[in-house]
Image (cartoon, rainbow over all chains, first blue to last red; front, side, top):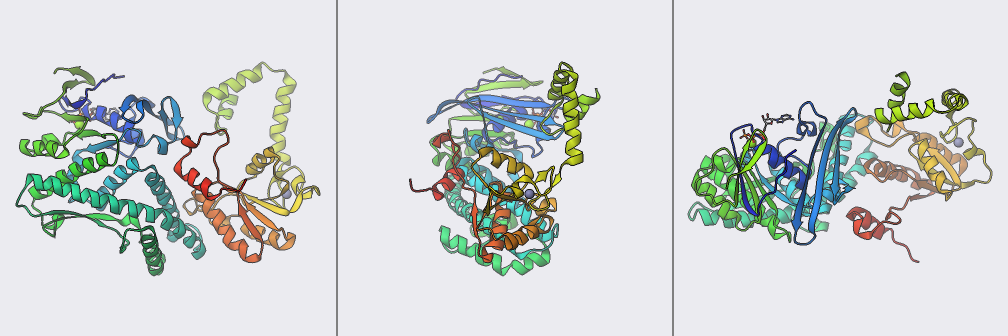
Amino acid sequence: MLDFRPQAGLNVLVGQNAQGKSNLLEAICLLGTGKSFRTNRESDLIKSGLDVASASGEATLRAAGTIRLSCTISSTPRGTRKIYTLNGEPVKYAKFLGSAKVVTFVPADLQLVTGPPSLRRHLLNMALSQDQPLYYRNLARYQKVLVQKAALLRGAVAPDPDLVNIYNQTLVETGAAIMLARAHFVSALGREARRVQDQWISDGGALQVQYDANVPFEVATQDAVTAAFEARLRERAEAESARKACLVGPHRDDVMLLLAGASLAAFGSQGQQRTAVLAVKAGEYTVMHDRSAEAPLLLLDDVLSELDPSRARAFMNGIGHYEQAFLTTTVMPPDLRSSALYEVSAAQLKRVA
Amino acid sequence: MALINEFSKLPTVGPKTAARLVFYLLNRPRNEAQALAEAILAVKDRVRLCSICFSITEEDPCPFCTDQRRDATLLCVVAEAKDIFALERTSAYKGRYHVIGGLISPMDGIGPAQLRVKELIERVGSESPQEIILATNPNAEGEATALYLSRLITPLGVSVTRLAYGLPIGGDLDYADEVTLAKAIEGRRAL
Ligand SMILES: Nc1ncnc2c1ncn2[C@@H]1O[C@H](COP(=O)(O)OP(=O)(O)OP(=O)(O)O)[C@@H](O)[C@H]1O
Ligand SMILES: [Mg+2]
Ligand SMILES: [Zn+2]
């Protein structure tokens, strides 16, 4: 067990490879989001040879004062089990999530522009789930029903148009809310990312971040989105049953990143792509902060050391005001001002400055 | 020990609980152990499904189906026989039951054809109940099953109702999740 009392401001964890820096960040992420930024397999979070992993901590919030959080993952013969507590009481994940908000920036995020759409949806889902409990609930319901509809289309049971319609009804109900939330979030994200990018580069052309909804809609209202989704499901009903797959809905959404009107993934230089990633991540932090009375925790795993010093500095400036951040690195970036510097070695922590 | 092993196969029983049960039994008189052993065997030998409602019973048809004091105009549809016993504990319901034997879940290979839906429709025809109460769980599968059954039964001219969603009694409004609260508002009633 490791006891860590970080400072306000920037906490830097420096150490050689494989000493446990990311592991500590992961524990903080687990307390904020109930999930790891490294893996989806919960059993990977348990130390090999043991059958329980647990993280607990205190967070001081403006609104709620000091809250206590814990997340315990145990492996049982029936699979892994996760228990969340808030102030000592067991709570459901939906209640735990968002108690202490975090924004993470990890090496995988550097693929945000060039990587698959799932990476960009993941960004939206993590941000919005923490921001709005209802978003998370709608997403969880949507995904559950989508799996059932997919199994039905695949032929796991006898084809049944009535049942498809019933699943579609829930998909529309939850999916329309997801699409609306995404549309609003992406428009704020685009504004912030562009503001940040404009601070960095004055003549590089405008950065645009656009919501590329799988079901296009005219105006972002509940009625318009619902109607568009229903119509699209009807149009594609035959195709869905022929191709035995769910072809319509926000599970196929994407976010388009454009520079001066051209797709960054297709036409951007590597430098331009990287700058856009930084602008989007900085923008994500700002939007999350704007939407909440609390400044989210900022978790930076190794990414700044992959950047040249001027970009790293520009990123931290782009974030603007944060209250507490954690940064892991193997080499202390020159002229980065930290509140506290810790050396991590063999899973031990020593404050050195 | 063999008995510890056997107990730990039971749902919700882990090795620790299994050991506690065994040590408890060791301290009890022999006739108690015998009564338990016989009751367990009787479940396997005598208990079967009621041919009308598919509840579990020692006599067919079951007491729920034969008891004339129960209201035959009400038919409550549940997923599993154990749900009947949960409803019976409330003493609030005095109608008849129908166990469909699960919930629609294509990912588990369960569609309407795998459930006792046809039998339910036949009963609606032959017993002419006035109200069908769908008492499936308020989760995704329970919802889909209820919607499916309601679309099937409503055209037969029978009124179909669903258990109300609500706030836990003794709970705090503050602590209810948004979906429960929203459903509770939708399902509000005049006082
Ligand atoms: N489930 C596990 N059980 C035991 N050890 C693990 C488990 N998962 C990861 N490790 C190990 O824990 C050690 C610390 O990993 P961590 O990712 O925290 O290192 P790090 O300090 O961030 O290193 P780097 O600078 O390379 O990113 C590594 O040796 C890793 O292989
Ligand atoms: Mg690391
Ligand atoms: Zn019966």
